[in-house]
Length: 183
Image (cartoon, rainbow, N blue to C red; front, side):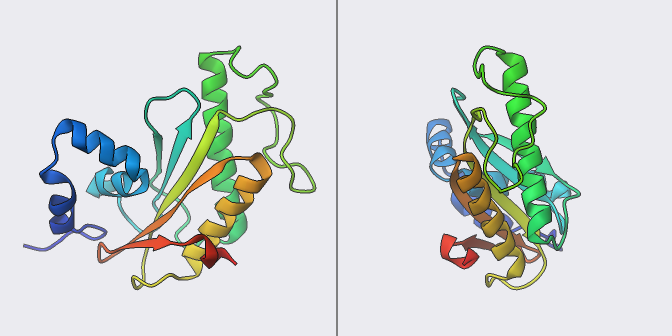
């Protein structure tokens, strides 16, 4: 039997199959990037797929946004654009659901102003992380560094904590990218 690209069914079974519902929930909250990486449908895993995991103010669990046709080899600006777009969409959705939650929030705001500082208003996003699907070895590469750098810039500009970056390679390997890789 041929194994699907971007999948490691044996590792999935070892990580998740023995857990009870409560244990599964606890593990998903402890490591939301790993949970997201393992639980998006195999059909959506391909080069360029990006998964954004965001913890929102008042939400009981992280929100997972799957971008199946993301940039396969993005420059840092493209990574920043994806993150800023997702944050703006999440803020707009929270604002629409509860218009009084963030009184200072402006739906038409640019997440970054000219000098890279955040614009006025709070974000409903408290923490954010990225799962990127890429080709290559299970060693940290330039794509991983770009995602981590963009995540760091968003974190500083908008005051959002980072969850981190996790890359899944075509072979199914998972690569945790340390913050120091962005430097």
